[in-house]
Image 1 (tube, rainbow, N blue to C red):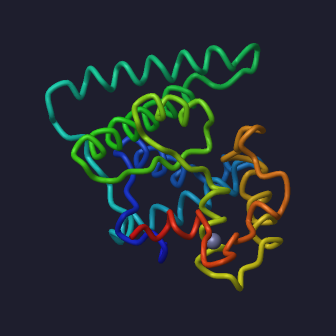
Image 2: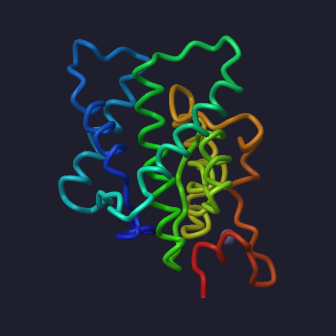
Length: 202
Ligand SMILES: [Zn+2]
């Protein structure tokens, strides 16, 4: 939070999804979703305090068309990837609503000459985002940036954190997944580290 501060925003559809997960009653929390629900509660507290802002889709002409187009692309990527893997209808409808809104908002921000980066662990969403000129990062990239910002955290600890966070949800596709703790090592040698540089442009 300290690293990104007020630049961290979520789309309305994403904030709805997080609030829904935080409100899942104890009786319906199972070992598979407990960590997710507890994490959602923490994010809701940050949303309520205003530390994380909710970004509304700009009512610009063409926004709804673009949203439809992005949704269709996300579903196409999903259909390609699914091949017999069952995901619940509700989950996937929501997931796409949040991703589509996030991609369209980020694309609009970039069209206006400002910077936006999509945070997603979903490989399909990051590919669709790229088609719309939106760069993306996953939770492993964020933890690595955290490691650059605070060298005392240590690569091994960050790799452990990554493994824990992505064990039951927020999974990162295998091809993008860090193989070992070396991924979290700051590469600062001769005063250059591309990650430090991209986290602190200028
Ligand atoms: Zn670094």
